[in-house]
Amino acid sequence: MVMRRVAIVLLALLFAIPLQAGLIIRGSGGAGCSTPDNGDYLDEGWEGTGAENTWTLFGSGTFDQDYALPGSPPTGSCSEGLKIDADSIQSSHYWDKGSVHDRSTDLDVVCHIYVSSNTTGTSAPDLTNIISWQLGTTPNSNVVANISLRWQTGTTWYLRPIDLSTPSVTIDLDTWYTVTMHMDGTAASSYMQVVGGGSTTCDVADECPFTRLDTVDGRYLHLGNNNATGGGINLDMSVGYCYVNSP
Image (cartoon, rainbow, N blue to C red; front, side):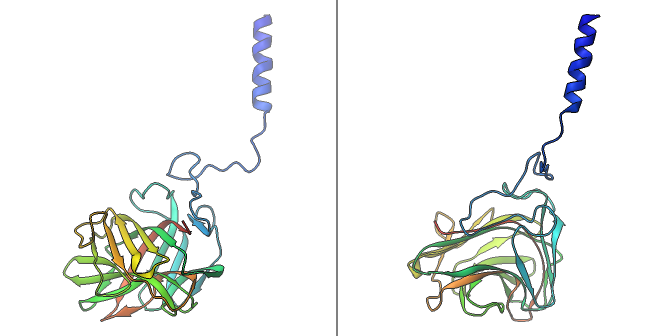
């Protein structure tokens, strides 16, 4: 009888303990999945309702900040992200650092991206800049560096930094990649790195060298259909975790 009373008291105490205020269990990344802290300027995972930072829409594209990410995103992304549907050029979702970053010091932009097979080109070779670090709020204005998605022919797609003369990495649609755009304090030492990419003309470290532009200091990160050449690209892309860091 005594033991039964003790058990009843313990159960009563257990169920009387309130849940901790503010406790959040996040999505498919597992219990407690949350946006990492890798960037000294920006960490964005689009977890919860809307974005975790302030973003501004430019142009006519559709940007869903509460999109359920497809497939198995890289570590660091959770269950939600940014979905970009942008058929027209100069449709972007941009973040404002608040002040310029001195281009004489290194800067990394790292994003998890997934280009859907709904993405189409119209007349090869087509390309659009999907990640851009720049001074202007208008897409593709006063650019420091960018990464373009290029459709060459048939089902062949590339990621390429800054211009058509630089090395590229082939990618598959409906596949996650971790893309790093490293803008070096020494302009000619900049590089793009694509983790999970296919054939590449880059160096043994899978770093595609390029020379960033050296005329302005950047302030804005643009994601979307920032600029196009050729017939243009109808972009359907998901973005998971994205951060900006000055190493």
